[in-house]
Length: 324
Ligand SMILES: Nc1ncnc2c1ncn2[C@@H]1O[C@H](COP(=O)(O)OP(=O)(O)O)[C@@H](O)[C@H]1O
Ligand SMILES: N[C@@H](CCOP(=O)(O)O)C(=O)O
Image (cartoon, rainbow, N blue to C red; front, top):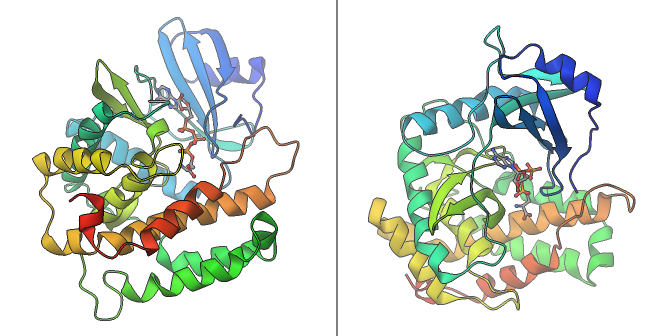
């Protein structure tokens, strides 16, 4: 459950007086998610989401995230829209945390990924990349390759308690990733733009076999477009038993390339991007696994799922293995 900060009924009713979205009918903390505290609000006007921004979100980045969501919507991407209060402010404070109300998106995220999800997912990702082109402000990826070594260090000896030898294994893996990363040293730079950077199944809603919306832009940043594909490859194309599903990957890429064809170098460098994407989620999961108190109201995600993926990508040296 991810409700780090509790909000009382009275405090919420007072907060809502600043808005013209009717009066409170009901609200509940949302169990899903691990980063922020989310509440579903029902007012006499309809449904909304209240988010209190927590640990990994830097409050200074919030105008960039909310601005991106507004921009993408103008460009035709369905995503939550910040709701302004009567003074025109979208960013507020509640229970001592930065807070915003956004619109509620209908749809359901796939609890089990099936082949039918993969092509629409690829299309939605490419649409987001194309729509993001005209959003000019940039945000550096604070969880990109420059951060991984320090993140591993911050896990300390705890890594080896999760899995014997893990610290050395990850250190060694970084040596097979960082020197080959696009744009580093003499490596070619790939097309950059606004990326979602957390397009996991729980952030993509479907209705009637089509993507009905994308949520959770709080890791979005300006980075390599193909890295976003590598994140999806990790998050959508491995089965529950840990096996890679090449058909899922092929369908996802077919959908993506209907909207934005890949450049040859993006395809060629997919193995290193996929290793990097597995490393990034393995490290944040590992950090959370080690540092989340046993009585916390959040269920940390298993880092070992991403160790299996990382090992797979380290064995892979050609994009052919991904089916594209
Ligand atoms: N705009 C929205 N419309 C509908 N449901 C939402 C919306 N935003 C969040 N949710 C619900 O809240 C859950 C957690 O949201 P998410 O943004 O992934 O949280 P976190 O940032 O904590 O990971 C989602 O899985 C979804 O069920
Ligand atoms: N997708 C990340 C965790 C971030 O949580 P989300 O609920 O915001 O997607 C992971 O799976 O490690």
